[in-house]
Every structure is written in C-alpha cells, then in structure tokens.
Amino acid sequence: MNLLLDTPALIWFLALDNALPNPIKTMIESIHKQACISIASLLEISIKLSLGKLVLGISLKEFFDLIQKSGIDIMQITQEHLIQLHKIPYYHRDPFDRLIIAQCIAENISITSIETASGNTPLT
Image (cartoon, rainbow, N blue to C red; front, side, top):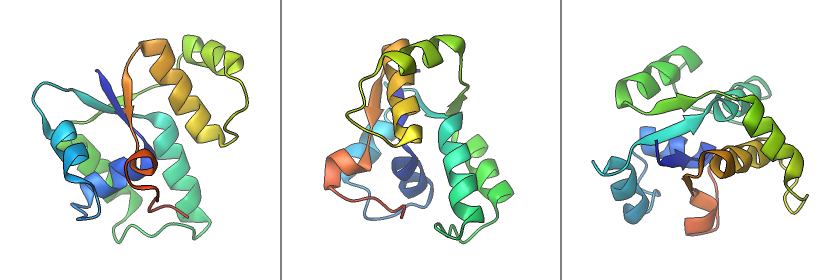
C-alpha cells in the first residue's frame, strides 16, 4: 500500500462522482499505486449515516461490498498508529482525520484528500 484515501475521496471515487478531480481519480486507478482506506473512514461513514449527516443512496453493506469489489485495501488500526497519533500536535482536531494522518506517518505512505485538492468535501 502506498496511497491512503481519506473518507471523502473514497466516497467520491466509489460513487464515480464527477466532482472528484481527474488527477486524483487517475492516481487512485493507477497500476503504480496500491490504494487503501483506513478502517477509521468506515467508522466515520457508519457514524455519519446513523446521525443522518451522510446519504450514500445504498445500504452500508452494499457500500462495504463496493469497497471489496474495487480492490481497495482496508488498513486496520495498529498500536504503532496510535503511538504516532499520540505524537501529532493538535493543528487539526477531527479525530478521524488525525488517525488517518497518523496511519500515513507510521506507514510512510501518501494521503489523497479531496479537501486538499478542491477545498470542499462531500461529508457534512
């Protein structure tokens, strides 16, 4: 694995959303990159669905099935990730984003973020 998708990038990629910038779509699809997502993203999606802050248009099970069919790996949370999380300064307070950042640092991989690319996000 050498590319971790943040939660919005994952949703837009699987939804084939035209709002996903082409360079990011190409990067995810590239045979030179092996994309993964954090289990923290799946937790975030589950929570936002249950709170009514996110609508996928399909069931959570169907969404998980899409991830599996896409070939995107799911990165579990390890003790090393939590140790790295503990070290990160509080420049950013979102717990899901902080964990995803910690995973990238611990695994020495890049992150693909819609917010970085376009300044907005499909999650509310």
